[in-house]
Image (tube, rainbow, N blue to C red; front, side, top):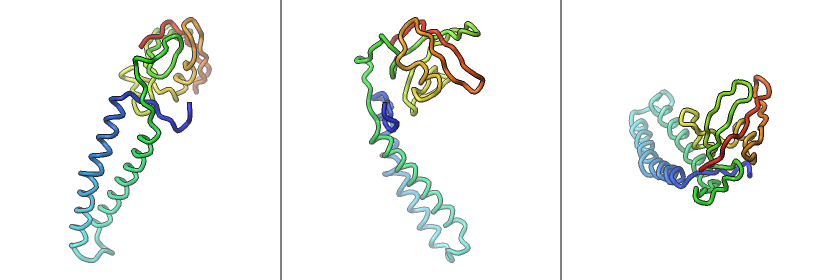
Length: 158
């Protein structure tokens, strides 16, 4: 897995493209208008509105560049072609914490889709990295700030 490659579902990829389109077609012209309006208000040296509008435009351009890079490095993963014999991107893995005996199910996703409350953890997170490639019955050892955590792989599904 390349450090720059970001694995996403088709839905997430489409949302990224929609966000980029909105930024370019709606937000960018709006930022330009705000700068033009502020410029008309006189001396640019003491025009806080102009400075704020230019800063907002700079931040928007940075977001656009970042999203363009993410889209360029995105790899769409089809859920129908997922191998459930081992933990990979988009698999759902049921694990038991060996210390607390607590069992949870997480879906392994790309960085953009990670949402712990929804049970989605990033493949790049410490737990995600520790689980990747493991098979049912394996014990994954994960380095955490509190020490080494051990998780038993109970089940792998889509």
